[in-house]
Image 1 (cartoon, one colour):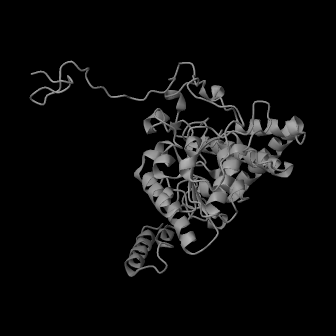
Image 2 (image 1 turned 135 degrees about the vertical axis):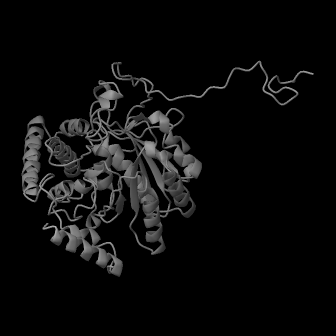
Image 3 (image 1 turned 90 degrees about the horizontal axis):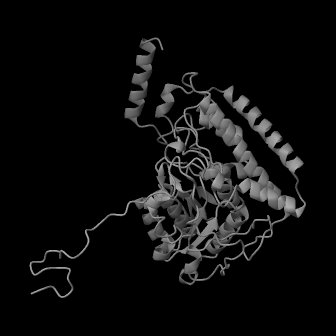
Length: 431
């Protein structure tokens, strides 16, 4: 007797009239040597995305996870309901912070190539993600960044020489060489210690936000990760807790198209947006043009106001592009088209804001060139001052016994013994 649906035989075996099963393996649109192609992206015009009320239920804003919040159009005009209508002073401050971040990156990249430090990671093309968010948050809100949000510290006016000291792990490094370069920690700036293990900061941010709410405080938390690490368990655990307890937290996913050399499709980009992760958890979700600093600012301010009004968490996907390699240890030409950065359809965040400021009549090319020169000299002078405290290759910058210190409030007896043993052996060896 034949199977009525033709799929399973009388002995429970698969029918022979079906095609063999196949796995889908994600493939980027262009490989090295091929022409860059972004035609598969649906980029809506600026101003087309509606702006829901900050108190609306997450279920009522489902479509927001599939659109794209944009403010700056192709002519540099700010349009639509998400336009934050910022004063000229704030716009020029945004421009300066982004330019300073890029100048800082350029100097530290050069320092690594000169052998002055072992490692560096640039944020070129992604400056709007950190600067826009930092200016939209309150100064005492706690940020739980990943390793490409150095712009948060810069936008909070943290001394760049302190950041350089940490990169060089020199005598001026407040962390005493205990962190990899660029993994800053600045409690006074509301900047939680960076971890090289991706997305560990997500549960930490949600926990901090829950504690703030439990204490009846007014401060909220914000956290960042890349699109690739949304596949990590920490991301989903954090989303569960944030949703269940309506934690006052903003969860930022920086979709820069590449997780080191793995293109975003391996994290699910071919199936849906990363903002859509919010839908299944009952969290408000926004998808934002990450190269439009006004859109980033407006979305972050919306999410911050929502959190402060006990409306719960918001997940924001920042749709952007990583112009440079993953780090100084990476060669992107080995896995992606050389044309990609120039063909990226959303442009450069600094150039777009500069165009907007010129269109408003508050800026011009001459002042921009002068600012770039000023910032390059500012960063150069800070680097020279920092390098006087030591660079890679100058030997140990901190006493060896310091490795035992500041781990426990009171050092336990066995660590005291080990520290003394090490000192005795070094003394005996004449070191």
